[in-house]
Length: 274
Length: 169
Image 1: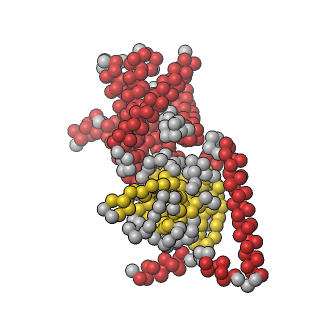
Image 2: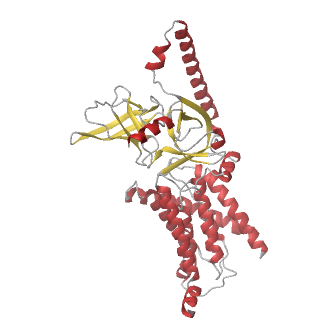
Image 3: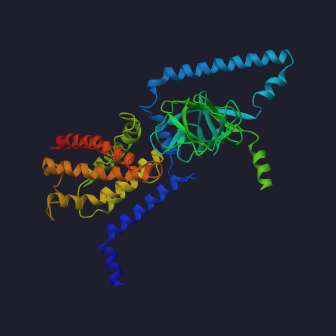
């Protein structure tokens, strides 16, 4: 007994060091899996508040650009509205509703308080949380395309797993036909992502547009992602399809969070079949 | 004594905020993210009793991790260099006993100081980038990141040490 105690006293700093290192490593391993740890993330109230109030460097430089982007989006939406009114008058409502992707979504706006794009697990912090009806696994987009998926929430803030995250897997398809695959990221550069699992019979060319598929309940169908930059053909399969994002992920500010109103119904139905 | 506690608490908070609010958004040449917060480890007084120092270093690293959503990467690296600091100083100075109370980096000669600062910075960055990128990138990409970032962080830390310790004398 005496020996054990003296052993602990002698190596107390080393033991302390070991214990703390083990804690740090377990946090690290947790953070590399999709289901992240509950408290080591910047959606909590303190970090959210600090990012919100002391946002010194990040965003002031691009205000003009962001305003331009927002007003462009506004005019686009206004144009859509007038179209809709016209068709309503000429009793052609069904044409618009069923041909353009018919789904039931609501959008909540938010702005990005912290943006990362050089790590392998990039996470964004946004200034809306549970009290604004933001929950885990909601899609995040802006006018130029997909941003990511909500990964953690607190009452007033949320973190978003960026499309630039090694755990990110987003269901996507070619715009010109309905062949679909998965968008992933290999952590090399914030301008390109990879398009995987595309079947051989899909005929692709450099410059083809990739959009979200709408098979998952996270994103609506038809949200822009990027264009094919290059690809290889090996063993009669597509490999290394590089997709250039429409979004400049280093300079994003205003985003929309998408809620699928039918999500619970769809999920319940799918679970019944399993 | 109270003065020491006060200085180090202020230093802890200021370095943390400087790192997460300013430096984490600075990207030299598109991918170099200088790390200054480990200056805390270099400036913390050297004592035989180092339990508090280890815990503080761990907490500082963990705070940076919480802000930048990186799990425990910075905590692991900062704790490691905090633990290695004293043995490394013994090694560099080539003697086993020295005056703990009066020691600061200024007591080292230029080459010793540079070796001390850059080797601890290198070790820290090695752990950070290995844990962060081991899944997605190969050895060459990681070592390039480690080396280039070490140079920038090392220079930044050296100048900060020079600046802060000059004022006090």
